[in-house]
Each structure stands twice: as C-alpha cells, then as structure tokens.
Length: 118
Image 1 (cartoon, rainbow, N blue to C red):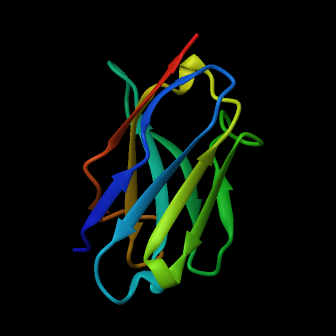
Image 2 (cartoon, rainbow, N blue to C red):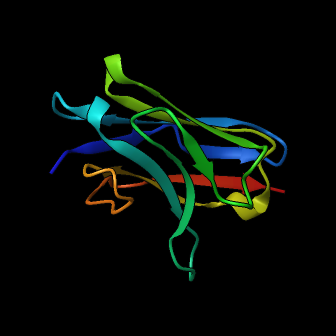
C-alpha cells in the first residue's frame, strides 16, 4: 500500500475557497490514478473527483464547475481546489490511490475535515 496524508481542511464561510492537499509516499505516484471522496455525518462516502495518471479528470455532479483536481508528480501530491463552497460540502474529505488504474481505490488517507458555515 501507499501512505497518504491529507491536509488543508478547516472552517470556511459559504462562498469561500479551500485547497486540500494529499501527499503520497513512495516513488511510483505518477503511475497511479488518484481520487477524492467525502463523507458527511450519517451519510455514505461519496465520490468527489478523480485524476488519472494521464491527467484526465472526472467530477461528481454536485461539484462540477466548483472543484478542480490536479496533481504534481514531482511532489507526489494531489490537490483539490474547492471554490464557491456551500454548507452541503461539509464533510470529511479523503484521498485515495488507484494503483491499478481500474477505479478500485486500495489505499486511503485518514481524512481532513471541511466545515462550511452559512
């Protein structure tokens, strides 16, 4: 497995922005697909965004046009830029690694809390 550490969560007002970071261990980060997921209290974990090793991206419907996923392979880091945040975005955000590039995420970070106040 690869070790993943998220950072950048916090408290922000509605309409504000945050950037989450997820740093991966190891030397083969550039070969992985990476994803962001979130889980709100009492709800299931939902897909937020993914980025393939090619750089192609996908987004959940609720975040399209507001969130942007990117990666810096030289820094072993994937980012999630979140703009126009809404109270409904409040959740614990997790990054995950798809080492086989088949959308099966087999390594997960510990999560970072994002709270959006109205």
